[in-house]
Image 1: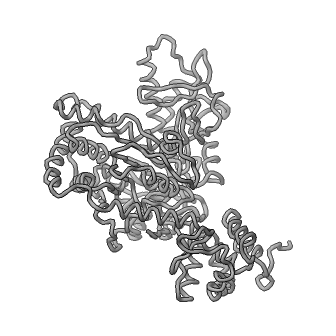
Image 2: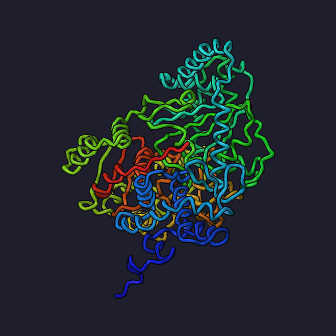
Length: 621
């Protein structure tokens, strides 16, 4: 067989280098185009632009150019390794990028149409040590200016005296409404939200992030003398936005809520009843153009709460800060260890320093929720071990699982060498679906059933499907969602073409049908009518003809990215059978934290452990 890849001593142009290093085309095209149309088209210029492109692709605002040659090469290796197999081409990378390091000043001097400084309108903006693409430079500059304006407390000193009274009212309200005692870190979050115009809250699974949102809103209403506030709730995805408003409705409709005082009932009646995706808030409600353009609209809001903030894309956040009035209180809440938005910098994760890192100037607006209220301590221990790279704990966990003497029924690891995936899937499907499929094997009859009875039936069906979820890393491949869903569809039903009682997920926003990307439903065959896709609503369930849905997929299995903002009693997390670049510690952590009661991880122990130890972290802000 003749290799089409040239030998290393015959590499003489940029395209051959890309071919050897297997750089994705969507990254290299930017560098190639800029160098060709605006620069001198030299290989060194293309390499510099390529490095900047890779940096922004992998969660950085810029390329920081070290003054030391060895430091520069080490940074190049790490940067390349995040998108391609750099280790096997270390000598090649050294050969070509050392030339870049030695000639970087001349590259800038020879290409003044590409490189500029703050105030210039050039493709690349330079500071003392860094190279930015123009858009990312403006994002960072505007966000830093926004933060500087927001870090000072908004309350005057005499107003602070009333904070303790407001906290006491809120704590009592939470206890009486939900029989829930706020933790010390949650009370700290209340104080920060009352004092500051920007509050950042991070917490792991079970630390009460949704609970604190509700009680922050209560405290702000108490602080406003029970008068209404213009409150906006938002989240990056439709699923997260829906879950946020449902949580508020659940918390304010408990049995205990009936015995609240008139003042407490009045406060709860002023809590918001709708939530938005960030995209809908910006581009539909305010009709802002979704590109880098001047923003003239302003959001009429006293309070803006954004849940699942780790998923806020940087471009959306940059637009958002332009429309928020100065008096508006902003609460960003999420889990620093979860995934950022796809192909974007996580502004939330960049704002919060690592636990052992020096405190930054934002320390007075950041609070970490530390106490967990989740009954299942095993999952919390597992996520803590992953977060802290506790290899001793993780190895003991894997060893006990392999010997089948793991004393926890809540967390388990199944080695793919010992357990065929079909057997694992069949066990989970039988456990969760066997009874409901046996009760309604072909169709469901709604004749003579009242609306209440129909809703009760659909609630049972949805609860069953929402009790478990299979999570995958990729869409394609042996252990991707396409293959796993195909297997599940056959295992759960006798006929592979039978659509009745299969879960589905919407894959693109469908505004005519009032469906958002990530919305989940169940296909049900109704006797005398045919196949319908049912979706949960705030008041019950609604149906849409299956033939009116264009963009959906079966959803026994979903990617971890798609699962963000959702929770399930049980999850099966399936790892790929080989190491891939997109698999990170954050991805594993996010998948496991979707589970409330039970986690099974399926894959190879070596891949699991190596992923935990290869966590890519960056903090530029």
